[in-house]
Length: 79
Image (tube, rainbow, N blue to C red; front, side):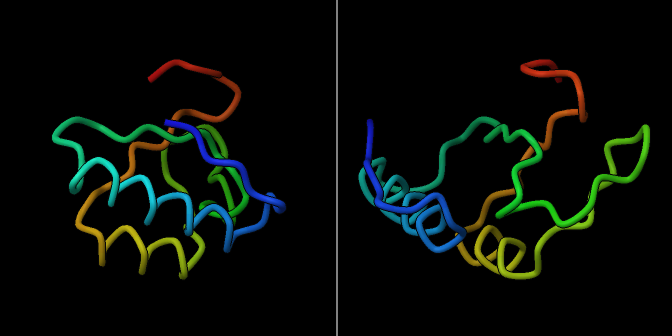
């Protein structure tokens, strides 16, 4: 599934999630993995998996009913 947006901003990121979950018919059963992208993460806590999430992102994923799995900073594609 692909979706093109005129913006790379947080609103487009959220709209893409709402559209994707609608097309998929709900929340995926497995992990939803993310890198540490700005619309979701406000701050990476040095050398740990802890993140300070953007409050709007936290509200969206809690409302939609999934817990994002955030990848380690600097470890592209690895868990």
